[in-house]
Image (cartoon, rainbow, N blue to C red):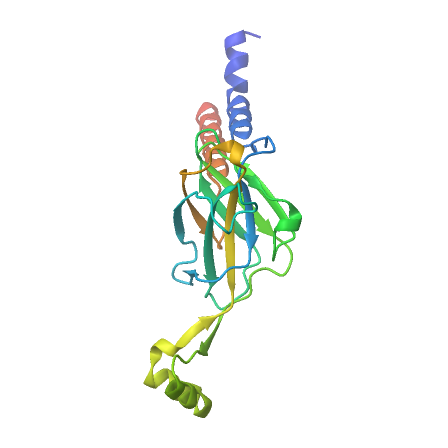
Length: 223
């Protein structure tokens, strides 16, 4: 068979193979930033109208880091969706020279499994299993003695008199992205998105487009 014809027949398969290779998980070198889910207080709300909030922070040496010499980013979120979050993906925009990976299982709370995948632009670190993140509940949290007496009489009355006292309680989790001092992580700007509803991975989208393109060429050839 003519080499040109053979290449033409195998071109769709080669395209699919190339996409699969570039969408594969990045190999970790053991010192890259670790993505960990922990407890936390103070929060970015995750709601039904905003289930996938963005985050942006600068890595610093602070009390949330795994060791005093580490640099890290720490953000706290609160599940205000009214239902338990059983699957959580942290989509982190890639930084040159850094490869984000799962932290040790002993460091991760709420979930029992973790996996990471880099599509060349964004690293998806996905958590599942375990208890998940339970939903926060709305409660009357009085700020004064008067508010406390009102809340004892009637929670609805408390909400009506001072709506600011009716707050979401619980359902919080901390996102920790930690790197050792050898990585020069201090000062790095980390941006990304917390995904609590399924979204197609960029690698899957590219693969689907490649398959559709190959199928279209085959249909045109057969017409």
